[in-house]
Image (cartoon, rainbow, N blue to C red; front, side, top):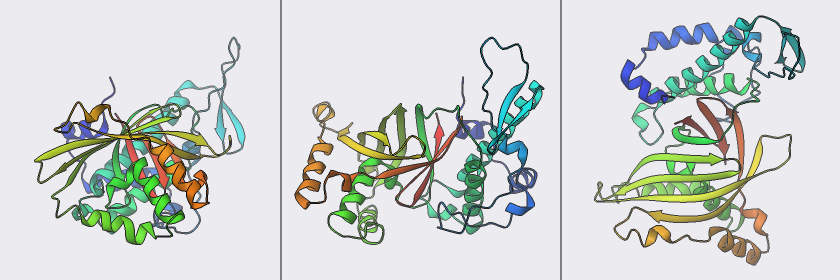
Amino acid sequence: TFMPFHTMLKLTGRPSSSMLAARAARLVPPSMSSHAHSPFVCGGGPRPRGVPLRIRRRLQVQASEGSSSTSVPLKVNDEDSWVSDESTIIQEVDVVQELESALLVACMHAGRGDDQSYRTNENVAAVNDAVEKLANVKTTNSSKTGTWRLAYASTPLVFRATPFYWLVGEMATNIFNVDAERDLFPLIGSLQEPLQANFGDIIQEVDGDLLRSRVQLSVLSGALSTTLVTTARTVPLTTTTSQAQVVVESSRVTQTPLSPILDAVDVPVESIFDAIGAASGKGASALKPVMRTIYTGEQVRVEEVQGVTMVFERQ
């Protein structure tokens, strides 16, 4: 049975800074250690190269059925390298798993985002560096399908890790010419304190092209709790890119004092916003946020939407 990384940490204890430093020294080549800023979060320069060959050898097992050969091709950049030692394959998998674990440890130290007391330049840089290493890993056989919990967002406004607010951002920017990043989202976030609101787990359930988001929210110091459920589908822009349009289909509010009445009420978000786009003369495509997949692995998934980097842990 797969044990989520945050659960494992509760059982084994939080790694010390010295442990993290030792792990970074072992996994990160010197040519990359000086890059404290990430192009994914800070809009920095080109992605640093120099990832060790053993890390770039991400499994791309293409052994033909019935083949008598014991060699297994591994992808090394754009050329195939052949190895016949099965222990080498296991070693490569261990390296990738260790990189994923290092990212989750860095996320734990940086905090999910809504508690900025954890955020320092050092631990944010650790997350950025870990994302960069994984972005260079060639993954072909890890599926997005599953349940994912938000472990890190590059913004303190963690509600932005949900498709509904991606859609709100597109509407503000493309229909009403409002700078959502500078004006709208901070305004929404400013309501959190007077409402004594707190966000619980932010979960994404992925099944093929279907994406369902569940956001737990409590207000008035927990006197009222609810869950916002948003259903969306993803449409790849091309077959060769990691980018996909997110089409928000519906939203509903569950687990309120009016349940189960409200639980069964789906707001037809797609139809409403398509009508808004058509009325504006800009069309429905103006309200389709784009999600860029940076990495998908066995433990973690990294996405970027509207300049916000999000790390999800598989449950």
